Length: 101
Image (cartoon, rainbow, N blue to C red; front, side, top):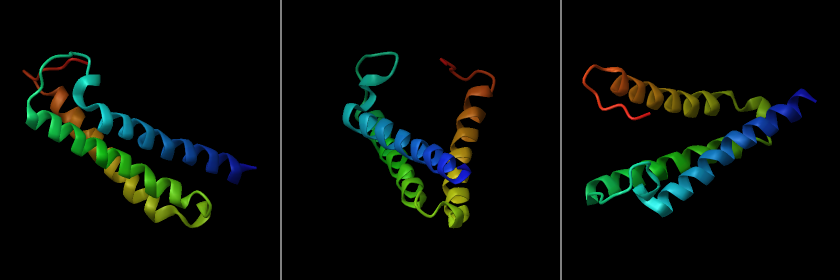
């Protein structure tokens, strides 16, 4: 039972980046809260990171069937996601940063 619950949770965590990454890749920065004209560089960077986010879900989904042996891939991908989150937090928590969250 616990194995199945873990597989379902990991499956959901793998599908979320796939769906949100694909939408972000397709829509670009138009989905940002402040619509307007975006530079080509912002659009390019936004879609690049959307593709990385989308790709981050693939290793998670690949490991669902053999969940017991999947420790190293989960730690690697999870560590990258945590590092990205820390980078965002570092930027938004600094004085004089433009925080719109």
